Image 1 (tube, rainbow, N blue to C red):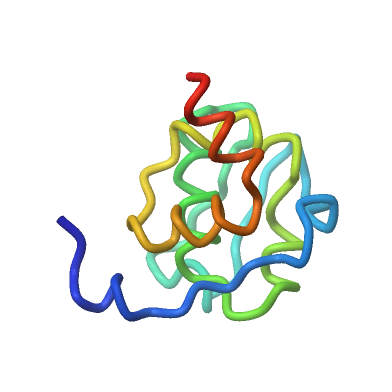
Image 2: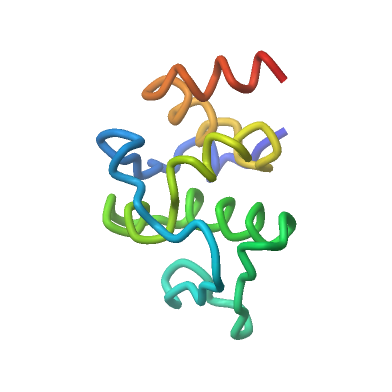
Amino acid sequence: MSSRYAQLRPYTLPGSLSELSGPAYGSVVLPRHLDWGPHYEYDLADVADVLLMYERVIREAQTPEDLHTHLNADVLRSRWRKLFLPGPARAAWEARFPELASTAAAA
């Protein structure tokens, strides 16, 4: 069950997946408006870190630029079905990008 906030919150989406040109390897520190907890460096070689970072960026992005800068299209496609996202966020992304829904259905 998702919260009322998650149901009503608008989620930022990119115009296309090809715009997602963020890093695929290395380490990332997200800006405070995306990750306001203790300072954390995400190691993109660690699957748990990738999932956590992508979940936070998708939930908290305020502009398409947030998505373009921090998400990578290939990484997103490969990890989509493993992401723990609010239902409305997942639905919005899959409605805009049916390939993500078909990737999830094939899993």
